[in-house]
Image (cartoon, rainbow, N blue to C red; front, side):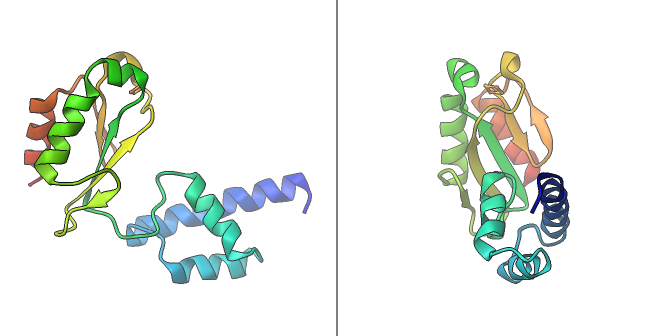
Length: 143
Ligand code: FES
């Protein structure tokens, strides 16, 4: 496959993965098989693309995906205190989902607002300069 064709397939595959994830909330095994067949790729290649992008999931997630940045800039601004408060409140570790499927917690790398950390993201909404109290307030508003 030449480079242009390969790029086209990759872009098209990413678009399909987004559509599937938007529809199911994750990418089920059957859809991975369908994509592998459609793009004439080994399933491992489709999994490779999915696992490269941290915002694709192969398991159902919570209604609210809580992402807390723990990269250096946020860490220097006490993101660990926010993280510990959220972990304790939800009784979760990173990449876990509450039994009621309401929350999924993820410790992530930089969310692109390094000067305003600690940064927390709930689904697509960014919260800057959070502390443990504001983080818990945000979670309480999701209940
Ligand atoms: S280091 Fe946290 S947003 Fe960049």
